[in-house]
Image 1 (tube, helix red, strand yellow):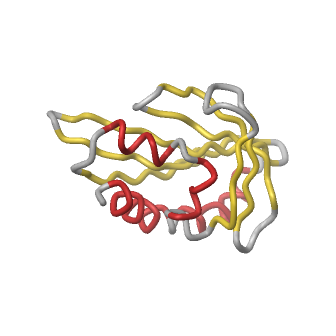
Image 2 (tube, one colour; image 1 turned 90 degrees about the vertical axis):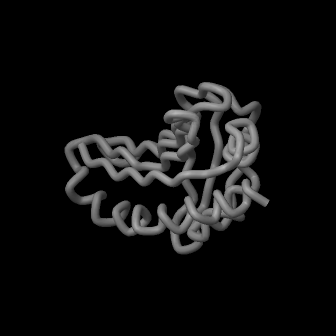
Length: 136
């Protein structure tokens, strides 16, 4: 397993953060490496979606562990493994933090980690853009 996590504080409310996180079609407004993303139904467990990176291939994801105003995971299958994009709103002593992260599982993680770790380098930039967007 390989994991990367990034946390950022915000003054926004959990519901305002959630509105932007759950707006799949507009993820590219705060994720520079994403050309587009779509969702094939409601924002709930099991719903499938599609995304395409600016310099990458199109991929399908599934929403998992959706808890409104709190957290969700986008799960994507890779050869002999899985990647998960983690999104969480954390209330810590009255202060809100957003956690963005990646988990990768499977026997070929050591290979795919090289590709995904480049995407992980962009997570702090995306998190800052997300906070700017939600605090407007």
